Length: 183
Image (cartoon, helix red, strand yellow):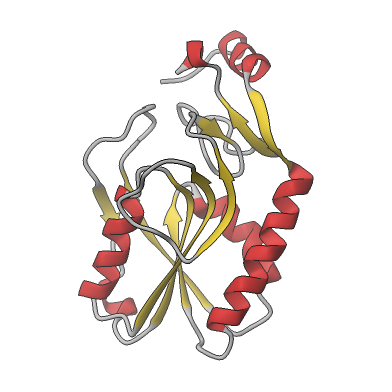
């Protein structure tokens, strides 16, 4: 569903900024330090969970000053909707994972269903170890936990830094909460 410019502007105008771009930079720096402590010297395979983690990977990977490789995994529950459904696997690099130290990198820990299933899939596919990092964690119960978190925010519908609202706003430079009337 495409948003017309009037609806786009209205959603943006009603949204509340929860985390500024400066706060996100500090969070990314801290994440990089924590990941270096865990993974430096392990030559990890970083799996970017498509599509939301593309921006996270693009901002975080240049901060990681150790040997690593990058691949992706494509599993989604939202597919442009504002609520998650069944997990849809679009690409699972099973052979590339076998015997590797894997870092699963995702944009958000919401309910934890996607991250949990991706981590399980990595173990099933024979990863030597699996580490996980998300840029944003909602403060709420989750199905799983992750190793490294950038920022923790209230349980609201969010966009920015890879998170989307109806496939828009991934490029917003901050984490914004959508107004209740727009969810």
